[in-house]
Image: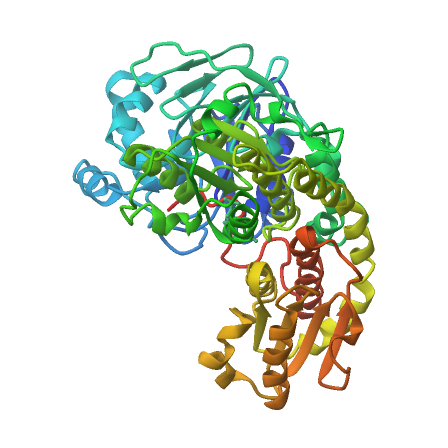
Length: 611
Ligand code: AGP
């Protein structure tokens, strides 16, 4: 999704803006731009490109800018195709420059009114109305802050904006409603960004703006107000993001680095949460026991990969806690009018904590009268974390690759921890808890072992390079892992991939199987393995090419059409977490061969902050 960075300082801000844009690239974008105030001419200057930040950098090398105040943007197209004209900043009458993340739903009506006032539109975007509208009010009272405050109530939809004007050369204004925005505090300088990651090189001192906040930044001073101009106070945080988490190191892509970081990410997620083989009950905070004791059902809400983590958790919660667990895609839940039960715990899963659908579904669940809410999230202070009664953070570290990997496996770790905490209120024995804890503690080591399959999977990947389609099969708790494997493959290699519970094969998808169709099976040694083997025989009998991930190579006789990748003996409870790893590696290696943009696959965004 779009990324915003802005700076006001006593030094040249252009390198800060460019570095910030690079750090926002992971969010996904298709064009980029920046605007600064040229002090000599008192004019706004801007540069915009379709494509990558690097292209913007090249343009600026040929015609350098420098200034002590500026705003910049990476755009992910919503209204209007990716093009130079539609890229931000949008500038009104050489006086007001605006960058925006979000969607203005009533932009057409506003555009018509502004056109009647004589404003000429140069783009197809919804954002351009904001620039002209601010300019319209600025003409009337010559005060940028008042002009922004007069404009915001007219906007229907979601926004995070940064505004600057040649009429107010020493101030930057930022505002948010529904889209994330942070302020960075420096010495004699202040910054605005979509997330703290963009500000890592310049400051760790961060303030997360809340919906309705308007921030006015000057070099030595800043103020946050509400829409009426009343001062509001927001707490300062020290960002935990370190510079090294934002670097690729020896890895070619962030995704590869993040796959290999999983043993450490899981160890850090477990850190401080286990004592004497048991989960510490205090980790959810003092009110957790009171909130969890009456719970009789769980409703999980999430999108994409996070939704797949929820599907795995359903098996754990129903097996170990013995209460019903429902899992639903957030964009469906929010419009379905589900039947609310105040004893149903709402669990939201999100890497970013800013996914618009998940946030809206949580608000809808609250409105309908569901029970308490718990967020499992990787970004502290994200909107989802702030809107939830209870929070269980995944300590995965910043995930930059658009394809989620370590966020997924650490979500699963948190969901298993939650299973124990819920189970305690429903008679889970100490023995079962200790077994789960032992399995969790063994995870980093087991994943280290599985990561050694990378070379073998690299060879396997060559057989996928010319394929158009792939089928993933799993059964039981490993079916969601097949779904996740298929999502990873399609996201970054652009190969069409589907996942099915293997028992469903003969009810339709078997028709697709022939010698050109690779079929990837997640086949651990569990109670359903024999059933799965029969399903695989059905594929083999129709000439399908089988790639089987199993505990032991003896699951099926290897041949030109059957390849078995052996993962070794695994503890059954954590087996889905471990089986996710080789599928991530497979998707990565196939994408590498296909030469796709692994970390920023086409059309996708890391943080989906619009509906
Ligand atoms: C994962 O690889 C995807 N990029 C995507 O499905 C993602 O999981 C989804 O958009 C949800 O994001 P969240 O976890 O930040 O809410």
